Image (cartoon, rainbow over all chains, first blue to last red; front, side, top):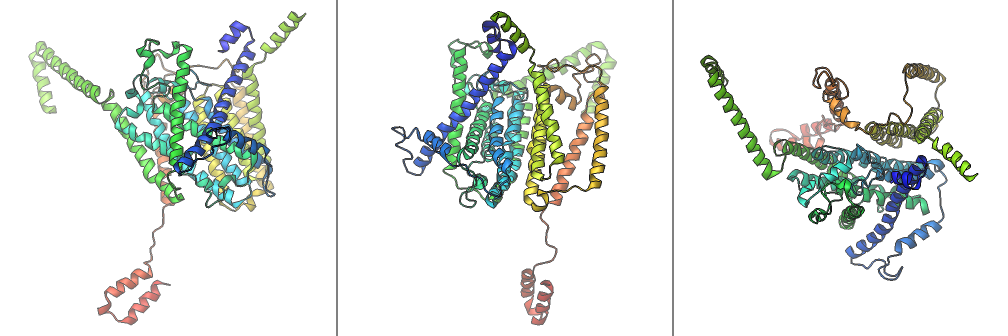
Length: 406
Length: 231
């Protein structure tokens, strides 16, 4: 797109790149902010329905669809309080640290083929690394608030996130191994075609590890049943007890942004990314299977696919949040260290062995393995025959060696 | 007139080099934040400045096209080490750590060490014959792949003519040594942090064992054992 601005409109190079960078940033910002608006409304409605209530019904006419906007205006108008003993600089800075981490991770997240802020060779790694920085904002908030509830919440969050990064990393490595690349665009493209090409259906191990990933992702974005950092029945509101108004809403935008991010990451890593379950465009002959030459409309469809999958992931998180009770801290640690990590390690090993022995899937893989055995057998017999023709001594020697080796 | 001024402004703006700009920005942030780490008294403030400094260094890595190293920097130092540091500060007593006073002797030793390191780094920086200008060294080639290949013993960036699998060409041995070392550290940490088993039997167990042999022993001995166990 920058090339278009440079060549057609005639903008200088630096201005064109600045425009494109600004445009990408604004688009990503709108994904987070607009997504937060929609998801907060959806969470209210879903929570209400699960608890046999109606939720917001009046704001904005039917279904209360303007409720999040009204909430936003209320938050803007709220007084911005700071406790007396608080560390002013860190207290003010903490929400932005959280939000920036969430925002930066979106830079490397592709929404469709080649529709990515910055395509990175190590995209998966970058996203996971930057997502881990979000906890720093929470810790700073907990420390700077000068409140023991905030401090307890932050300590729980730190322990939880640092522990859950281990199984999360193991789960993320599996699709990387299957695709042979850490580039998120490549990983998504490897799953093009029918839904059976998705990595979740690659083999039984990936199917199990997908659910381990879901568990760890919910824990790493600090959602119920892992929301010990803001356990409202024990810690008032946890790390954001002392926050109000816009700063408080920044924490929530970061949380909803991270929820969407881990769901989109799950969609790209396991659920085919921007590829639909049925390759409609290829069946209709719209694309020749090479996505780089796709028309613009196909990218839009790809974006919609990814958004649908990621939204489904976010809705799943909401369903879990309003269904399961909160775990205790020892149960959280047990889940991580005694269940998620060993299961992830075992599944990682299983996928590795599967890739080694059945690289083409169950049916084709066994077929190919048989063919490989037959080729080896043919080669061996051919060598024996050629040895026959050479000389008797060589033949007897080789037979002798063969029998000895047997 | 307009045309000329537009041309001048275009040539002026075309000279704006985003690579140079961001290099200077990140470098300035890294240096200033590192200074603030030294000059600050509060441990958590120090950690925050260290985050800024290390994050800016990661930015420099990204700018140079070394995305893997940059992400590694973020994950290990900012996301791991510093979170644990602040976590430790929050767990321990905070009053002594809010205003740290460095003794003068420590300051002298630290400045000598820092000056020595600075001298080495400056010497190394000026011993490079030709620095590439920012932006010229940008490569679109993947950076993580050669790193991984070199770690398992294949230097794809060098030795192309002498065969990729030439012995002693990669870093397989150092990689393995570091891996085993880290494993030892992990096991050692788990050993140190394990739950200690009680050596002394609990009084309840002693009473139970005494009760089970009650017919052969007198009540007097059972009370002495009980008192001995509960000491």
